[in-house]
Amino acid sequence: MVVWTIANQKGGVGKTTTTIALGGLLAERGHRVLLVDTDPHASLSYYFGIESEDLDLSVYNLFVQVSTKEQILQSLCPTKYKNIDILPATMGLATLDRSLGSKGGMGLVLKKAMQKLSNEYDYVLMDCPPVLGVLMVNALAASTRIIVPVQTEFLALKGLDRMMKTMDIMQGEQESPFHYTIVPTMFDKRTKASLLTYKKLKETYQDKVWPGVIPIDTNFRNASSAQKVPSDYARSSRGVYAYISLLDYLLKIPAVKNK
Image (cartoon, rainbow, N blue to C red; front, side, top):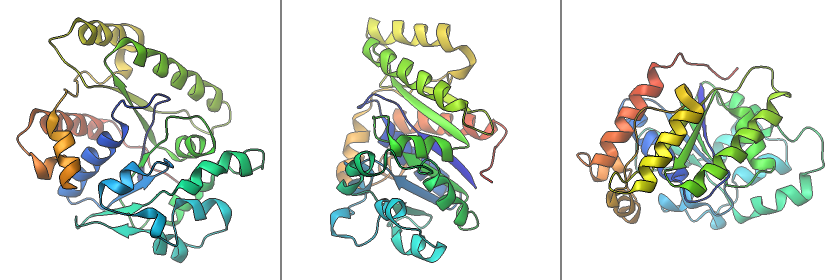
């Protein structure tokens, strides 16, 4: 099982869109995909029409009780797409830092849960909240690769800097190094800000930056309204083409599997 964690300590950079777009493309290629929503706002869950507050089980339950494989499987929600399931979020996740933040052994909850599902899915994509806390720490610890979407505007570089510092701090507690790819998003070649930010990203992070860009594309918003993955809604759009290129790039990187 390969686990991609989509994370950044800044909101509005395209984390959920990236999770859904890549998940949809992987499913099209025949891979069994699990999308994990770790954001209390539950945008990923709502995207697929899941009213997670009406559910009895969610990601939250993994943190407040010891869950068997069967219980985790019962927490999953199917989607209208054959190869995509979701582990939904609830607002209760917002209380975890207060109730569990000081409790030992809480940083590996998601990793242990995913290990129990290792024979059920080929890829797990985790959508993170833009806040450093128990949820992001868990998602990073569970990852085999971290995908960091960065909006191509100057304020987003600050969020990226915080994200890099977080990974540096956590690295000391990891058995193996973090593997990550920075993905420039919301790129508009007509603006000086996008061009200069992209140049700065390449200068600072070099080969850690995917050489392509995800452009601004209204089809992403429209696909969300239709509750369809972008590649199903607008296959020939420039945004989908960019995500296909990103996926091809990621799949060429030697895979690190979650053990």
